[in-house]
Length: 76
Image (cartoon, rainbow, N blue to C red):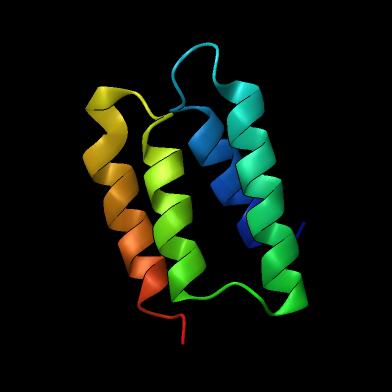
């Protein structure tokens, strides 16, 4: 996990609804593995976003979605 991924990992885990931490960790680690393998694409990001937002506290969803959308603009 690089420093940017670690920042995102910590950021997300602080905003996950109680009881969903393990699910979030699995999703995050899978996404980092895909980034390293070069298989992280727009299609995967859309699925990741749907699954991750389902785990996020309601009051944080808009902010998290904005950050994921900004990241998505950098993906081919």
